[in-house]
Length: 188
Image (cartoon, rainbow, N blue to C red; front, side, top):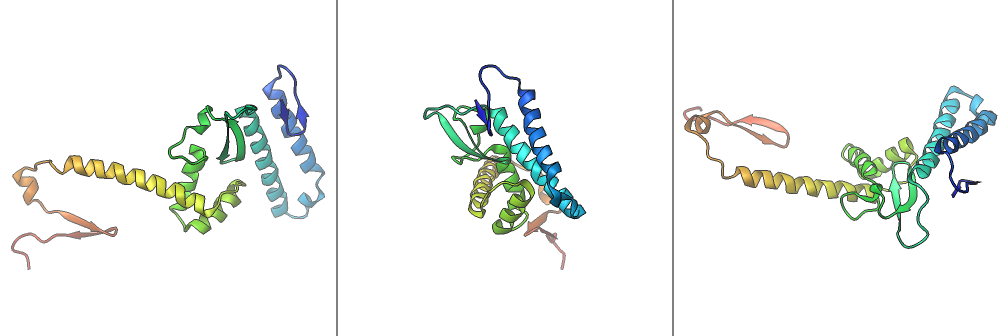
């Protein structure tokens, strides 16, 4: 197995690999003189180093992809990886090659801001390389699934009968997030 520029033959200890990856990145970071120019640069360079460590360790954790056509490229929260198309990470809603956790993260950011801003935020905070169109597609996929679920709930409740006290009670209508009480009979 080849990981980064290391080659491992036969059985090997995952902890050894993780420690080698971490040690190499940390040593390179320690030798970088730029990290000591300011507090900002120190923290930024450390965060960048840790993102690289996360990406490599995550790639190691999923194992070496098969050599045949049973492999799949998958976009994760930690970057792009190649894995077996039967790996648990490939089991996500929709036909997108994006992991479930990455989809959740994309939906969270995509519903807070416009998709182009979501792209900038997401990539800046995670070190990934998602684009606005991917975020939009994921948000629309889950929005559609939620809409279907809501429609099922409404259809099943449409035939519910209400008692006389429930029917004559004061009801509220919600329009665009604002609540307006309805008038009762006899009110001006």
